[in-house]
Length: 157
Image (tube, rainbow, N blue to C red; front, top):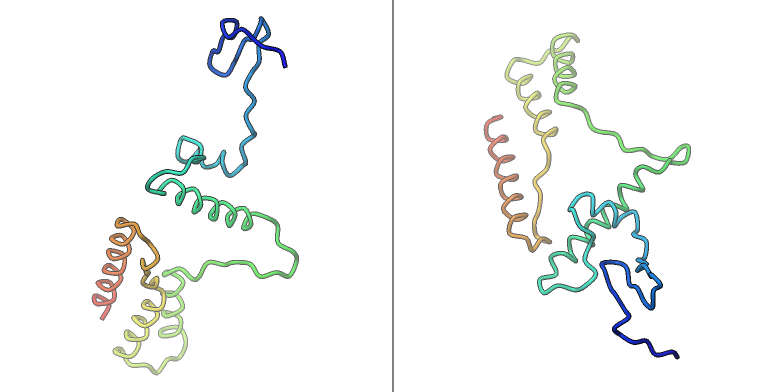
């Protein structure tokens, strides 16, 4: 192996000049998930473990979400199930109106209103659980979400 006089080595950023020959540091190409992470957060995911593991947990969660989104965008084979959004609140009101006023309904006022409220309650999102989260913010957000749902339910009756 040839010895090199350290005084002939010049390092500037990504480039090292050794005995007049410039060498550029080569980095491993980033994965599409890493590029997407940088686009969202402004930096690449961590490569060194941190004390709190916050960044590593965020990167792991990001990868799971990225993979799921990528799978959703891939073409599905013919005949496979496709995700469809549920009815809108407007659709539910139209259906209720049609059932009560357009068709020959023998429901009294109290029963028809109760039926509408039942349909709206089924339309509302379900309460969430933060039992798997260690984040105080997530726990508080879920608690607030569930309190809003309880309040909406109370105001319907």
